[in-house]
Length: 174
Image 1 (cartoon, rainbow, N blue to C red):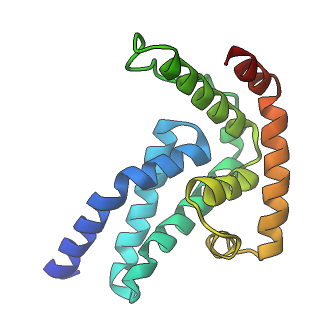
Image 2 (cartoon, rainbow, N blue to C red):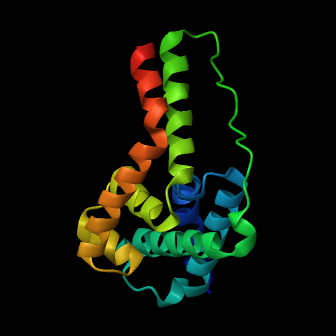
């Protein structure tokens, strides 16, 4: 890779690393694994940087690599073990009830996402966090639009079931 390509890649990496890391976290629910997934996606992008002609497609390439990596990782037997929730304490603990409710909502949502099967979780993250439409999510996942629609419906149902009591508790607290 020549110096100009390295500079372009470095600029892209700097601009997108935090967003990719957050997406990876939503896909896997663990910051350490999210770092690994994001790194793997950027390494794959770096390897193919010169071959990617459409620079507007970089986000799609990284997103697809990230989602496939998360799904593949979840299929490995050692990833099926239970993990302990290690969510950080809120930074503004004394800031008021609004912050506490936001943190509780976020924690409940992340805990619920962890219980959704990986492919359905990937669809939910792509559709609702990344804001992709059905066809863009289908392209990122390498499947049909109908599969995205059905996985979205199943994923939302699984998330509602996983959240169950947590949603009721949050509603009654407000």
